[in-house]
Image (cartoon, rainbow, N blue to C red; front, side, top):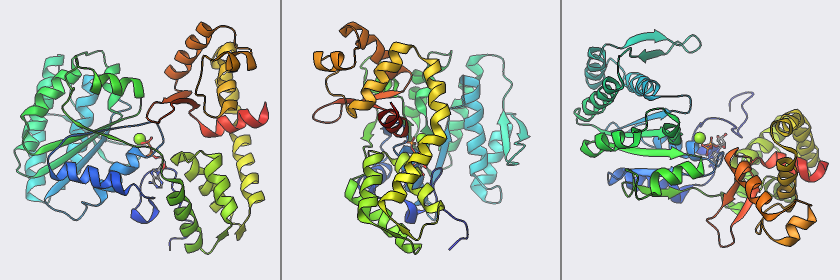
Length: 378
Ligand SMILES: Nc1ncnc2c1ncn2[C@@H]1O[C@H](COP(=O)(O)OP(=O)(O)O)[C@@H](O)[C@H]1O
Ligand SMILES: [Mg+2]
């Protein structure tokens, strides 16, 4: 076992041992890959979308018939950035000492990118200095066509895909769709978080991506499976944890993956040999205290009415009836239309989200720790 390693990951992916469940979703994604079906994977933030992609890609690590490529486009602002990121991940994915790699790297070099090196990681970064948008479009097409011509199966995951809607170039979806349709060996996973935007891209009949992909939704991990996972990991590291402590963790975080991992990570790091309920409660309070300044910053960034509404939603835990008189009067939120406006604004700022995939849909505060802080503090 690695020294100082914390098995409750709060970023990235390591291997199957530290990954809880997602068996059904993994199987679906792998079946889509096997059957050459493009997938859209969209769900709320910090639920485990990126983790799932890495988990699935990791299972092909020793498969020399499938090449998996991952790109996160959150930091891109336009078509040019997108092109550069695409070229960079392709360039870095293929080792030059293999024959396919050599061909691909030579092919990309013919497009005349500027190659620089990341100051921290030392990894090559490619960029193109082209005149017009059309030339970038052409470069994207060349990159895809070139990859596709190598007669190897390629699975391309584009994470934070909704970012393309922020670009000044408004034809990104149409552009990608056109290229994607012509590819034979290259298949895609489009992944994203912003619910409204993802919905707009993939489910609106007017939009080019409509009906082109198989949708995979990612919900919360089953509570029982998560409890077993937490128990197993602590036991493997010779730490004891009581069942009521685990119940508390999953309840406190509403089983939202990142927050559950974070609380377990914190507990693990505190190195208590027998973890009991009071220990978990203390850790939870410490986490909330650590985040308090951030919450106060949020408060300064939104209006008083929005803050009051956010608090009200937090206190409700899950808010099913946002416009009921009972809710509005209980928290003195003014009129129904004020609540509508407030909710729209909080949704847009991603301080709350709407879960419409359950029998009784509800609004909930996005950040589980902020939710608990508001419930306890105020
Ligand atoms: N199935 C899982 N088991 C354990 N940890 C997970 C699992 N899925 C995700 N995580 C962890 O939870 C955190 C959030 O997951 P991530 O995949 O980044 O969410 P998203 O991409 O949906 O925002 C990450 O730290 C990741 O390591
Ligand atoms: Mg992600």
